Length: 73
Figure 1 (cartoon, helix red, strand yellow):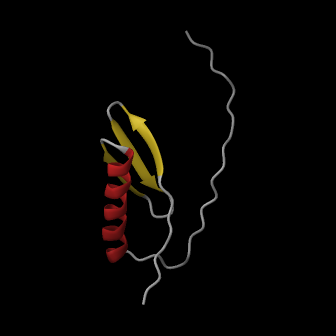
Figure 2: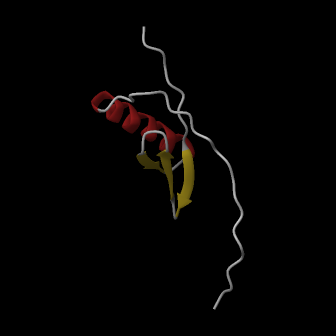
């Protein structure tokens, strides 16, 4: 039996849609809700991995960083 992989979903909102990305694989999807976006991302990622399986286990490192404020014109 093949073991399930746990991958990362990074989401952000664009107008009235949520955009979801899987950084380990490079797949994207979207949905009107967070749940829909993640479900669509899962489906897109599974389809991608059927064609292009991961050659090695990928571990993402998630962190935050701060940027300097930008003056508004």
